[in-house]
Amino acid sequence: MGCSNCGTAANGKPGGCQSHGSCGTGSCNRMNVYDWLANLPIHDPSTECRVVEISFSQGSRKDFFRNNTTQIFEKGETVSVEGVSGFDVGEVSLTGELVRIQMKKKSVDEYHPDMKKVLRRASERDLDLLKQNKAREKEAVIRSRAISRQLKLDMKVSQVEIQADGRKATFYYIADDRVDFRELIKIFASEFRVKVEMRQIGARQEAGKVGGIGSCGRELCCSTWLTDFKSVNTTAARYQNLSINQSKLSGQCGRLKCCLNYELDTYLDALQQFPDNADTLQVAKGTALLIKKDIFKNLMWYVLPDSNKQYPLLIERVKQIKKLNQQNNIPDDLGAVEVNTGKPKEELVNVDLTGQFSVKALDNADRKKRQNRGGPSNQRRDDHRQPQAQKRDNRSSQPPRDNRGPQQRDNRPPSGPRENKPPAPPRDNKPPPPIKKS
Image (cartoon, rainbow, N blue to C red; front, side, top):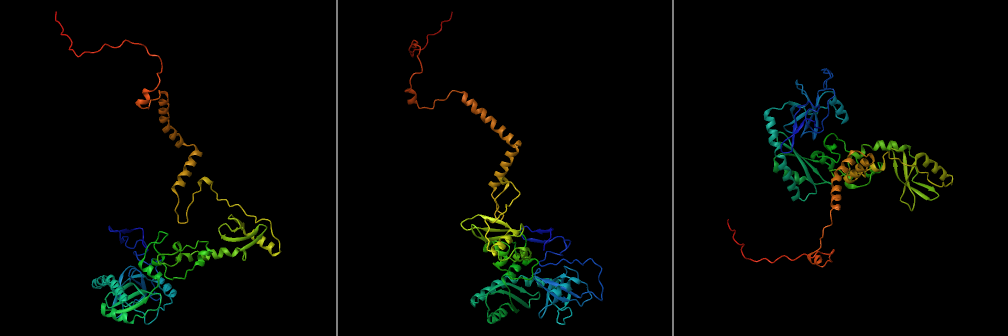
Protein backbone atom coordinates (compact mmCIF):
# COMPACT_ATOMS: atom_id res chain seq x y z
CA MET A 1 0.00 0.00 0.00
CA GLY A 2 1.10 3.53 -0.64
CA CYS A 3 2.49 5.96 1.90
CA SER A 4 1.78 9.65 2.44
CA ASN A 5 4.92 10.62 0.51
CA CYS A 6 3.76 9.04 -2.74
CA GLY A 7 3.66 11.76 -5.36
CA THR A 8 1.49 12.20 -8.44
CA ALA A 9 2.86 13.04 -11.85
CA ALA A 10 1.64 15.92 -14.01
CA ASN A 11 -0.63 13.70 -16.08
CA GLY A 12 -2.50 12.46 -13.00
CA LYS A 13 -0.81 9.07 -12.80
CA PRO A 14 0.97 7.93 -9.60
CA GLY A 15 4.55 9.06 -9.58
CA GLY A 16 5.79 6.28 -7.31
CA CYS A 17 7.16 6.21 -3.83
CA GLN A 18 9.46 9.17 -3.20
CA SER A 19 10.41 8.15 0.32
CA HIS A 20 12.67 5.31 -0.89
CA GLY A 21 11.35 2.83 1.63
CA SER A 22 11.13 5.14 4.63
CA CYS A 23 7.39 4.53 4.85
CA GLY A 24 8.03 0.98 6.02
CA THR A 25 6.53 -0.79 3.04
CA GLY A 26 9.65 -0.55 0.87
CA SER A 27 7.76 0.90 -2.08
CA CYS A 28 4.27 1.49 -3.41
CA ASN A 29 3.58 -2.17 -4.14
CA ARG A 30 0.27 -3.99 -3.97
CA MET A 31 -0.09 -6.85 -1.51
CA ASN A 32 2.84 -5.56 0.56
CA VAL A 33 3.59 -6.98 3.99
CA TYR A 34 5.34 -4.91 6.64
CA ASP A 35 8.42 -6.68 8.01
CA TRP A 36 8.22 -6.09 11.77
CA LEU A 37 11.35 -8.19 12.40
CA ALA A 38 13.60 -6.35 9.94
CA ASN A 39 15.48 -4.36 12.60
CA LEU A 40 15.94 -7.22 15.08
CA PRO A 41 19.43 -8.84 15.31
CA ILE A 42 18.36 -12.45 14.70
CA HIS A 43 20.68 -13.26 11.77
CA ASP A 44 21.79 -16.69 12.88
CA PRO A 45 23.26 -18.68 9.96
CA SER A 46 22.11 -21.97 11.45
CA THR A 47 18.46 -20.97 11.86
CA GLU A 48 18.13 -18.21 9.26
CA CYS A 49 15.50 -18.77 6.61
CA ARG A 50 17.09 -19.14 3.17
CA VAL A 51 13.81 -18.58 1.30
CA VAL A 52 12.67 -15.15 0.08
CA GLU A 53 9.34 -14.00 -1.24
CA ILE A 54 9.40 -12.40 -4.70
CA SER A 55 6.58 -10.29 -6.15
CA PHE A 56 5.91 -9.78 -9.86
CA SER A 57 3.91 -7.15 -11.73
CA GLN A 58 3.79 -4.74 -8.78
CA GLY A 59 2.57 -7.35 -6.33
CA SER A 60 -0.20 -8.94 -8.41
CA ARG A 61 1.60 -12.31 -8.15
CA LYS A 62 3.98 -13.65 -5.49
CA ASP A 63 6.05 -16.79 -5.16
CA PHE A 64 8.79 -18.27 -2.95
CA PHE A 65 12.39 -18.81 -4.15
CA ARG A 66 15.37 -20.36 -2.44
CA ASN A 67 18.46 -18.21 -1.95
CA ASN A 68 21.44 -20.52 -2.37
CA THR A 69 23.83 -17.68 -3.14
CA THR A 70 26.16 -16.06 -0.65
CA GLN A 71 24.45 -12.69 -1.15
CA ILE A 72 21.95 -11.28 1.33
CA PHE A 73 18.98 -9.61 -0.37
CA GLU A 74 17.06 -6.82 1.27
CA LYS A 75 13.44 -5.94 0.78
CA GLY A 76 12.82 -3.86 -2.35
CA GLU A 77 15.78 -5.15 -4.38
CA THR A 78 15.25 -6.33 -7.95
CA VAL A 79 16.55 -9.85 -8.56
CA SER A 80 16.60 -12.40 -11.37
CA VAL A 81 15.04 -15.79 -10.58
CA GLU A 82 14.50 -19.06 -12.40
CA GLY A 83 11.64 -19.09 -14.86
CA VAL A 84 10.18 -21.47 -17.44
CA SER A 85 13.03 -22.24 -19.84
CA GLY A 86 14.72 -19.00 -18.86
CA PHE A 87 14.67 -16.36 -16.16
CA ASP A 88 12.27 -13.83 -14.74
CA VAL A 89 12.76 -10.53 -12.90
CA GLY A 90 10.94 -9.68 -9.70
CA GLU A 91 11.19 -7.65 -6.53
CA VAL A 92 12.01 -8.96 -3.06
CA SER A 93 8.88 -8.40 -0.99
CA LEU A 94 9.67 -10.31 2.21
CA THR A 95 12.71 -11.83 3.90
CA GLY A 96 13.59 -13.43 7.20
CA GLU A 97 11.35 -15.21 9.68
CA LEU A 98 8.13 -13.76 8.27
CA VAL A 99 8.67 -15.83 5.13
CA ARG A 100 8.27 -19.00 7.19
CA ILE A 101 5.00 -17.70 8.57
CA GLN A 102 3.72 -16.98 5.06
CA MET A 103 4.85 -20.39 3.82
CA LYS A 104 3.08 -22.11 6.71
CA LYS A 105 -0.04 -20.11 5.95
CA LYS A 106 0.03 -21.19 2.29
CA SER A 107 1.12 -24.78 3.07
CA VAL A 108 4.46 -24.54 1.25
CA ASP A 109 7.34 -26.80 2.26
CA GLU A 110 10.52 -24.88 2.99
CA TYR A 111 12.76 -27.81 2.00
CA HIS A 112 10.91 -28.86 -1.15
CA PRO A 113 13.47 -29.96 -3.76
CA ASP A 114 11.54 -28.50 -6.71
CA MET A 115 11.52 -24.95 -5.33
CA LYS A 116 13.02 -22.51 -7.81
CA LYS A 117 16.13 -20.51 -6.97
CA VAL A 118 17.30 -16.93 -6.96
CA LEU A 119 20.00 -16.45 -9.60
CA ARG A 120 21.48 -13.01 -9.04
CA ARG A 121 20.74 -9.34 -8.68
CA ALA A 122 19.08 -7.98 -11.80
CA SER A 123 21.58 -6.51 -14.27
CA GLU A 124 21.00 -3.70 -16.76
CA ARG A 125 20.44 -6.23 -19.54
CA ASP A 126 17.79 -8.03 -17.47
CA LEU A 127 15.97 -4.79 -16.79
CA ASP A 128 16.06 -3.81 -20.48
CA LEU A 129 14.57 -7.15 -21.52
CA LEU A 130 11.90 -6.81 -18.84
CA LYS A 131 10.97 -3.34 -20.09
CA GLN A 132 10.75 -4.47 -23.73
CA ASN A 133 8.57 -7.49 -22.99
CA LYS A 134 6.29 -5.61 -20.60
CA ALA A 135 5.58 -3.14 -23.41
CA ARG A 136 4.17 -6.02 -25.47
CA GLU A 137 1.50 -6.97 -22.91
CA LYS A 138 -1.11 -4.36 -23.89
CA GLU A 139 -0.95 -5.29 -27.54
CA ALA A 140 -1.10 -8.99 -26.61
CA VAL A 141 -4.32 -8.43 -24.63
CA ILE A 142 -6.03 -6.73 -27.58
CA ARG A 143 -4.88 -9.34 -30.07
CA SER A 144 -5.82 -12.29 -27.84
CA ARG A 145 -9.32 -10.94 -27.31
CA ALA A 146 -9.79 -10.60 -31.07
CA ILE A 147 -8.63 -14.19 -31.65
CA SER A 148 -10.96 -15.59 -28.98
CA ARG A 149 -13.83 -13.63 -30.53
CA GLN A 150 -13.08 -15.10 -33.95
CA LEU A 151 -13.16 -18.61 -32.51
CA LYS A 152 -16.51 -17.76 -30.81
CA LEU A 153 -15.30 -18.79 -27.36
CA ASP A 154 -17.33 -17.70 -24.34
CA MET A 155 -14.38 -16.24 -22.43
CA LYS A 156 -12.67 -12.93 -21.72
CA VAL A 157 -8.91 -12.43 -21.62
CA SER A 158 -8.33 -10.15 -18.64
CA GLN A 159 -4.54 -9.81 -18.52
CA VAL A 160 -1.41 -11.12 -20.20
CA GLU A 161 1.80 -11.44 -18.20
CA ILE A 162 4.97 -12.06 -20.24
CA GLN A 163 8.11 -13.41 -18.64
CA ALA A 164 11.14 -11.11 -18.45
CA ASP A 165 13.07 -13.00 -21.14
CA GLY A 166 10.01 -13.22 -23.41
CA ARG A 167 9.88 -17.04 -23.58
CA LYS A 168 6.62 -17.58 -21.72
CA ALA A 169 3.29 -15.76 -21.45
CA THR A 170 0.48 -16.36 -18.96
CA PHE A 171 -3.04 -15.53 -20.18
CA TYR A 172 -5.53 -14.80 -17.39
CA TYR A 173 -9.12 -15.30 -18.56
CA ILE A 174 -12.63 -15.24 -17.10
CA ALA A 175 -15.30 -17.73 -18.12
CA ASP A 176 -18.53 -18.90 -16.54
CA ASP A 177 -18.36 -22.40 -18.01
CA ARG A 178 -15.60 -24.72 -19.09
CA VAL A 179 -13.84 -23.59 -22.29
CA ASP A 180 -12.11 -25.82 -24.85
CA PHE A 181 -9.10 -23.68 -25.77
CA ARG A 182 -6.88 -26.33 -27.33
CA GLU A 183 -7.11 -24.64 -30.73
CA LEU A 184 -6.68 -21.26 -29.07
CA ILE A 185 -3.35 -22.26 -27.50
CA LYS A 186 -1.95 -23.27 -30.88
CA ILE A 187 -2.89 -19.92 -32.39
CA PHE A 188 -1.43 -18.02 -29.42
CA ALA A 189 1.86 -19.94 -29.63
CA SER A 190 2.26 -19.22 -33.35
CA GLU A 191 1.10 -15.61 -33.01
CA PHE A 192 3.22 -14.49 -30.05
CA ARG A 193 6.13 -16.97 -30.35
CA VAL A 194 6.00 -17.88 -26.65
CA LYS A 195 5.10 -20.79 -24.44
CA VAL A 196 1.43 -20.32 -23.51
CA GLU A 197 -0.10 -20.91 -20.08
CA MET A 198 -3.85 -20.40 -19.58
CA ARG A 199 -4.99 -19.56 -16.06
CA GLN A 200 -8.64 -19.03 -15.14
CA ILE A 201 -9.54 -16.41 -12.54
CA GLY A 202 -12.75 -15.07 -11.07
CA ALA A 203 -14.34 -11.64 -11.16
CA ARG A 204 -12.88 -10.75 -7.76
CA GLN A 205 -9.35 -11.64 -8.86
CA GLU A 206 -9.80 -9.53 -11.98
CA ALA A 207 -10.84 -6.53 -9.88
CA GLY A 208 -7.73 -7.07 -7.75
CA LYS A 209 -5.49 -7.03 -10.83
CA VAL A 210 -7.15 -3.96 -12.33
CA GLY A 211 -7.37 -2.04 -9.04
CA GLY A 212 -9.50 0.96 -8.19
CA ILE A 213 -11.15 2.98 -5.44
CA GLY A 214 -14.05 1.56 -3.45
CA SER A 215 -17.15 3.30 -2.13
CA CYS A 216 -15.32 3.84 1.18
CA GLY A 217 -12.79 6.10 -0.56
CA ARG A 218 -9.82 3.75 -0.16
CA GLU A 219 -8.11 1.29 -2.47
CA LEU A 220 -9.86 -1.99 -3.10
CA CYS A 221 -9.11 -4.65 -0.49
CA CYS A 222 -8.58 -7.25 -3.21
CA SER A 223 -5.80 -5.15 -4.75
CA THR A 224 -4.01 -4.26 -1.51
CA TRP A 225 -4.10 -7.01 1.12
CA LEU A 226 -6.94 -9.48 0.56
CA THR A 227 -5.76 -12.76 -0.95
CA ASP A 228 -8.33 -15.28 0.30
CA PHE A 229 -11.72 -14.65 -1.31
CA LYS A 230 -14.61 -16.16 0.66
CA SER A 231 -18.13 -16.51 -0.64
CA VAL A 232 -20.48 -13.65 0.24
CA ASN A 233 -24.28 -14.03 0.18
CA THR A 234 -27.25 -11.89 1.08
CA THR A 235 -27.58 -13.62 4.46
CA ALA A 236 -24.67 -11.53 5.75
CA ALA A 237 -26.58 -8.36 4.83
CA ARG A 238 -29.75 -9.59 6.55
CA TYR A 239 -27.93 -10.32 9.79
CA GLN A 240 -26.59 -6.74 9.77
CA ASN A 241 -30.04 -5.20 9.04
CA LEU A 242 -28.93 -3.86 5.66
CA SER A 243 -31.39 -3.21 2.88
CA ILE A 244 -31.06 -5.72 0.07
CA ASN A 245 -30.08 -3.22 -2.60
CA GLN A 246 -27.97 -4.84 -5.28
CA SER A 247 -26.48 -1.57 -6.53
CA LYS A 248 -25.24 -0.56 -3.05
CA LEU A 249 -24.08 -3.99 -1.91
CA SER A 250 -22.14 -4.84 -5.09
CA GLY A 251 -18.51 -3.96 -5.65
CA GLN A 252 -16.65 -3.06 -8.82
CA CYS A 253 -16.40 -6.74 -9.74
CA GLY A 254 -20.20 -7.05 -9.91
CA ARG A 255 -20.29 -9.41 -6.91
CA LEU A 256 -21.31 -8.72 -3.33
CA LYS A 257 -18.72 -6.68 -1.42
CA CYS A 258 -16.14 -8.65 0.52
CA CYS A 259 -16.44 -6.21 3.44
CA LEU A 260 -19.89 -7.63 4.26
CA ASN A 261 -18.08 -10.52 5.96
CA TYR A 262 -15.79 -8.32 8.07
CA GLU A 263 -18.28 -7.57 10.89
CA LEU A 264 -20.49 -10.62 10.42
CA ASP A 265 -18.92 -12.54 13.33
CA THR A 266 -19.49 -9.58 15.66
CA TYR A 267 -23.17 -9.44 14.73
CA LEU A 268 -23.58 -13.19 15.17
CA ASP A 269 -22.03 -13.04 18.64
CA ALA A 270 -24.28 -10.14 19.64
CA LEU A 271 -27.42 -11.87 18.35
CA GLN A 272 -26.88 -14.86 20.63
CA GLN A 273 -28.43 -13.03 23.60
CA PHE A 274 -31.61 -12.30 21.64
CA PRO A 275 -34.43 -14.82 22.14
CA ASP A 276 -35.17 -17.38 19.43
CA ASN A 277 -38.61 -18.02 17.93
CA ALA A 278 -39.73 -14.49 18.76
CA ASP A 279 -40.83 -13.48 15.28
CA THR A 280 -44.47 -13.11 16.41
CA LEU A 281 -46.02 -11.99 19.69
CA GLN A 282 -49.69 -12.27 20.67
CA VAL A 283 -51.23 -9.17 22.29
CA ALA A 284 -54.75 -7.84 22.69
CA LYS A 285 -54.50 -5.69 19.53
CA GLY A 286 -53.38 -8.61 17.35
CA THR A 287 -50.23 -10.43 16.29
CA ALA A 288 -47.08 -8.30 16.43
CA LEU A 289 -44.46 -9.08 13.76
CA LEU A 290 -40.71 -8.68 14.26
CA ILE A 291 -39.11 -6.38 11.68
CA LYS A 292 -35.55 -5.83 12.98
CA LYS A 293 -33.11 -6.30 15.85
CA ASP A 294 -30.86 -3.54 17.17
CA ILE A 295 -27.73 -5.04 18.73
CA PHE A 296 -26.40 -1.63 19.81
CA LYS A 297 -29.39 -0.72 21.99
CA ASN A 298 -30.59 -4.31 22.67
CA LEU A 299 -34.02 -3.57 21.23
CA MET A 300 -36.41 -5.60 19.09
CA TRP A 301 -38.77 -3.66 16.83
CA TYR A 302 -42.29 -4.93 16.23
CA VAL A 303 -45.22 -3.70 14.16
CA LEU A 304 -48.91 -4.36 14.78
CA PRO A 305 -51.46 -5.20 12.06
CA ASP A 306 -53.35 -2.31 10.46
CA SER A 307 -50.68 0.10 11.70
CA ASN A 308 -47.41 1.41 10.36
CA LYS A 309 -46.05 2.43 13.75
CA GLN A 310 -42.99 0.57 15.01
CA TYR A 311 -42.72 -0.40 18.67
CA PRO A 312 -39.26 -0.94 20.26
CA LEU A 313 -39.22 -3.58 22.98
CA LEU A 314 -36.53 -4.60 25.42
CA ILE A 315 -35.21 -8.15 25.30
CA GLU A 316 -36.57 -8.87 28.79
CA ARG A 317 -40.04 -7.67 27.76
CA VAL A 318 -40.01 -9.91 24.68
CA LYS A 319 -39.08 -12.91 26.79
CA GLN A 320 -41.83 -12.06 29.25
CA ILE A 321 -44.51 -11.81 26.54
CA LYS A 322 -43.27 -15.00 24.92
CA LYS A 323 -43.57 -16.81 28.27
CA LEU A 324 -47.12 -15.50 28.74
CA ASN A 325 -48.12 -16.66 25.27
CA GLN A 326 -46.88 -20.16 26.05
CA GLN A 327 -49.21 -20.13 29.08
CA ASN A 328 -52.13 -19.02 26.84
CA ASN A 329 -52.10 -15.57 28.38
CA ILE A 330 -52.40 -12.51 26.14
CA PRO A 331 -51.11 -9.18 27.53
CA ASP A 332 -52.98 -5.95 26.90
CA ASP A 333 -50.14 -4.08 25.21
CA LEU A 334 -46.57 -4.58 24.06
CA GLY A 335 -44.98 -2.29 26.63
CA ALA A 336 -42.82 -0.38 24.17
CA VAL A 337 -40.07 1.88 25.42
CA GLU A 338 -39.21 5.39 24.29
CA VAL A 339 -36.03 5.74 22.27
CA ASN A 340 -34.22 9.00 23.10
CA THR A 341 -31.92 10.24 20.35
CA GLY A 342 -30.13 12.64 22.70
CA LYS A 343 -30.56 15.63 20.35
CA PRO A 344 -33.24 18.32 20.16
CA LYS A 345 -35.54 18.15 17.19
CA GLU A 346 -34.30 21.37 15.60
CA GLU A 347 -30.77 19.95 15.38
CA LEU A 348 -31.78 16.72 13.66
CA VAL A 349 -30.90 16.50 9.98
CA ASN A 350 -32.28 13.89 7.64
CA VAL A 351 -29.19 12.00 6.47
CA ASP A 352 -29.44 9.36 3.78
CA LEU A 353 -27.67 6.00 4.11
CA THR A 354 -25.36 7.04 1.28
CA GLY A 355 -24.15 10.08 3.26
CA GLN A 356 -26.13 12.65 1.25
CA PHE A 357 -27.94 15.39 3.21
CA SER A 358 -29.89 18.53 2.47
CA VAL A 359 -28.06 21.84 2.81
CA LYS A 360 -31.41 23.57 3.35
CA ALA A 361 -31.99 21.49 6.47
CA LEU A 362 -28.61 22.61 7.85
CA ASP A 363 -29.43 26.27 7.13
CA ASN A 364 -32.79 25.98 8.90
CA ALA A 365 -31.17 24.38 11.93
CA ASP A 366 -28.50 27.10 12.05
CA ARG A 367 -31.09 29.87 11.76
CA LYS A 368 -33.18 28.44 14.58
CA LYS A 369 -30.10 28.11 16.74
CA ARG A 370 -29.23 31.80 16.22
CA GLN A 371 -32.79 32.87 17.02
CA ASN A 372 -32.81 30.92 20.28
CA ARG A 373 -29.43 32.35 21.15
CA GLY A 374 -30.31 35.95 20.31
CA GLY A 375 -26.75 36.62 19.30
CA PRO A 376 -25.20 39.49 17.40
CA SER A 377 -26.30 38.00 14.09
CA ASN A 378 -29.92 39.14 14.71
CA GLN A 379 -28.70 42.59 15.78
CA ARG A 380 -26.69 42.96 12.59
CA ARG A 381 -29.70 41.90 10.57
CA ASP A 382 -31.87 44.55 12.33
CA ASP A 383 -29.21 47.23 11.74
CA HIS A 384 -29.12 46.29 8.10
CA ARG A 385 -32.90 46.64 7.80
CA GLN A 386 -33.05 49.97 9.68
CA PRO A 387 -32.12 52.32 6.78
CA GLN A 388 -34.77 50.71 4.61
CA ALA A 389 -37.41 51.33 7.28
CA GLN A 390 -36.36 55.01 7.48
CA LYS A 391 -36.74 55.29 3.70
CA ARG A 392 -40.25 53.90 3.93
CA ASP A 393 -41.10 56.44 6.68
CA ASN A 394 -39.76 59.32 4.55
CA ARG A 395 -41.82 58.18 1.63
CA SER A 396 -44.98 58.09 3.76
CA SER A 397 -44.46 61.73 4.91
CA GLN A 398 -44.40 63.03 1.29
CA PRO A 399 -47.70 63.71 -0.55
CA PRO A 400 -48.84 60.89 -2.76
CA ARG A 401 -47.92 61.14 -6.40
CA ASP A 402 -50.59 61.30 -9.01
CA ASN A 403 -50.00 58.40 -11.35
CA ARG A 404 -53.12 58.91 -13.42
CA GLY A 405 -53.06 59.65 -17.10
CA PRO A 406 -53.56 63.15 -18.67
CA GLN A 407 -57.20 62.48 -19.57
CA GLN A 408 -58.06 61.37 -16.03
CA ARG A 409 -56.33 64.45 -14.63
CA ASP A 410 -58.32 66.77 -16.94
CA ASN A 411 -61.65 65.26 -15.89
CA ARG A 412 -61.01 65.57 -12.18
CA PRO A 413 -63.15 68.09 -10.25
CA PRO A 414 -61.61 71.36 -9.10
CA SER A 415 -60.11 71.19 -5.65
CA GLY A 416 -61.35 74.70 -4.63
CA PRO A 417 -62.28 78.26 -5.78
CA ARG A 418 -59.78 80.05 -7.96
CA GLU A 419 -58.94 83.75 -7.85
CA ASN A 420 -60.02 85.83 -10.91
CA LYS A 421 -56.80 87.32 -12.17
CA PRO A 422 -56.67 89.67 -15.17
CA PRO A 423 -55.55 87.98 -18.34
CA ALA A 424 -52.05 88.70 -19.49
CA PRO A 425 -51.73 91.14 -22.44
CA PRO A 426 -51.13 89.50 -25.81
CA ARG A 427 -47.66 89.53 -27.10
CA ASP A 428 -46.77 91.05 -30.47
CA ASN A 429 -43.85 90.11 -32.57
CA LYS A 430 -42.56 93.72 -32.97
CA PRO A 431 -38.94 94.38 -31.92
CA PRO A 432 -38.49 96.58 -28.85
CA PRO A 433 -37.87 100.33 -29.49
CA PRO A 434 -34.24 101.49 -29.55
CA ILE A 435 -32.78 102.99 -26.40
CA LYS A 436 -32.03 106.72 -26.69
CA LYS A 437 -28.74 108.01 -25.36
CA SER A 438 -28.73 111.28 -23.44
